[in-house]
Image (tube, helix red, strand yellow):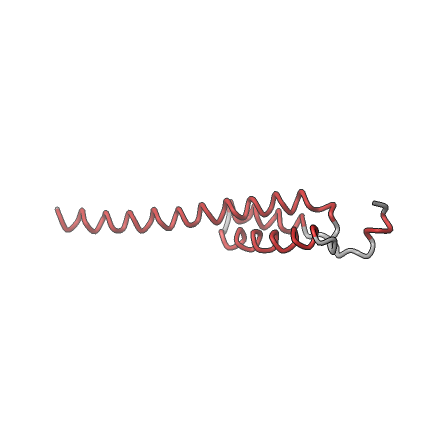
Length: 94
């Protein structure tokens, strides 16, 4: 494709999605959820030919970081509640 073919496409948000994915991993998991959702939407737009495909790699990387951040957050919440339950049982038994 030539550059003239890309001028009518929406610009990609690959860098933003990657930053959100990384922030989701290291700072606050809602950024990970946003990266996951935005990444899915943008990848669909890229595949449909409505968005600049040069950002596909960045978008995919950010989406994956967002997925990992979301999974880690869910696992963290599950571990927290399991600790609460086991703590309640231990205090009731002892």
